[in-house]
Length: 418
Image 1 (cartoon, rainbow, N blue to C red):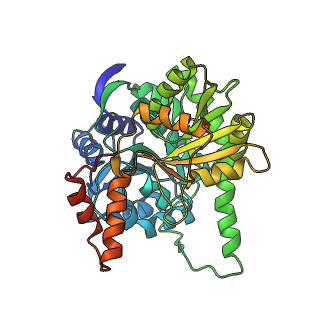
Image 2 (image 1 turned 30 degrees about the vertical axis):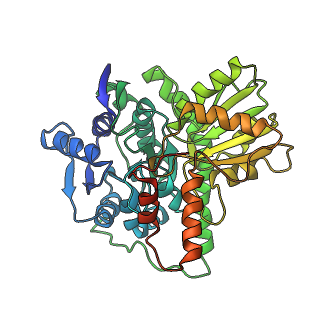
């Protein structure tokens, strides 16, 4: 049934219908509304036999779930930004132990400087930890991906992150078709753990593994992701039957037939990109878009098939590998290896900087011009502020405070793009 609801509340209600048995959470913006709502549902007795634990930290939250999952419980948590980094050791442990934990990441920038707004630097920092990472374009997809995440995690014994853009989605109120409990129960069977701790048959988990077996352990984790590449499209098809809509999968193409230029992105910016593609098509430009849903595992071959006929690919990404450039674009280039396709990187939206449709349209025109784009291209970067700070640093070498200088120069706490 469709209703106007905040994204965080929609996710919390959906997670509740997935019947987690243990939820351990520590509040940190912008995921707080998710765990607050879930805790109220648990207290009201609407989640069945679920134990909700208020822990002392994000590291504590995931550590509790590692124990609960190893004991055979369906488990859930949510975090963001510095919270995700604080639990980094446990993130790797959960994946290495093959525990099917589901975690919402309300994507947010990582400091310093402190920034509570959206980009993808938190998830990208742990992209190689062994967790599956699914990115939602809108709140409907965020709801649907959580239901699929529990089924995927438990079928493969592999943890899953569902990534939704902080504030842009978590705090947005929009129409969402919330599932019924009957629909979720039909699609998501009761959890039957492959293995679980038994006091009558004690074992050790997380034991030390030496060089003679560690590489094999890591390969087996990699193999689960290869299995996920096959499982995700199948789960997408099976999801459509009870819920009546396609959602999830590996990627989604938009107006790519005959497209010479294709824009690739993760997350909520895809909505803006689709609108920009519509405008560019009206101008007579053969432009399309591809949304990556599954970033881990990375859908190399499906992406190669979706992009291989284009002349140019523009990757718009909300992250930056400092000293290198784009993260997602590097993997797109790998997917298109040996094909005559130009791949250009556009770094955009860092720290919550707006990505207007007009800027997407403009950057496509610039890419098609004789000058082209510099690599990487920083969308709507205020070069006056940058150059002024560089002159200042040359005139007087000292440590920091670069952020304060930039804010003072810009004259506002929200640096305006020039």
